[in-house]
Image (cartoon, rainbow, N blue to C red; front, side, top):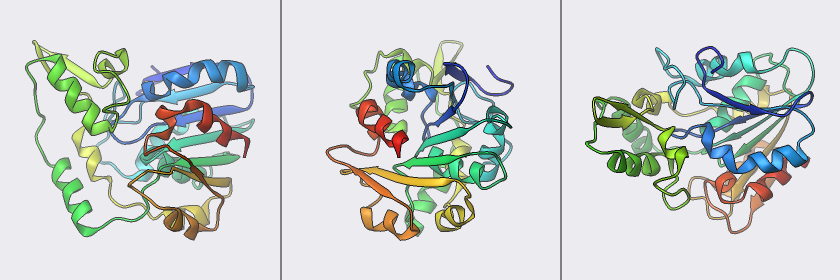
Amino acid sequence: MDGDLRVRTGGDGDPVLLLLHGLGATCDVWTGWEPLLTSRWPGRWVAPDLPGHGGSAPLPEYTFAALAAGVRPLVETSGRTVVLGHSLGGVVALELAGAGVPVAAVVGIGIKVSWTGEELDRARALAGRPVTWFSSRDEAGARYLRVSGLAGLVDADDPAVDAGLSEQDGRWRLALDGKAFGVGEPDVAGLVARCPAAVTMARGEHDPMNTDEQLGRFGVPVITLAGLGHNAHVESPERCMELLRV
């Protein structure tokens, strides 16, 4: 733990790589990266559970600025920090870099940049739902895999699933604070415009949440990862690690 955050970390020195997961997931999505980071990343790496996710404390209100403020203490005030974020984590990375935090580069994977009114209404409805309790770890785990988008990518009995669950008196629930679904639509154009760091956008070729054209509107490099989907960072850590060379 690092204050109110559950954190995985490794390596030593500069540069620092901050890894930010997407909505509903935990820092355990980066487990497959650890051997690559050990052999290829020259400095320290830090991967937190975002506020309200996994083992990190919830927020009174979920905004992109509040999520960025929650992980701000993990960024060194000196040295070089690179932030790689998936989906929601990519938006938080942009928010962080645009808030006066010393970030040298941002890589966003799978950021959803176009939202319909129906999608926003659905997200607000999810944010207002009461907690759902399950009678077994298997039921709760299946729900976690659906919510995090990891179904079919992570085995139900993987320890990473346990990180996304909470047990009390023989009942199970998602560790995720459902209010996080209400974070809203990001102003990606504004965030990119205010970001002093070098920005790269990436997406899996089969990601249904964005298109090359949508990401190309922001005037930054866009990289399409052939054959991969929304959770490209889980599907192929090796190929996504290459994004850090940009």
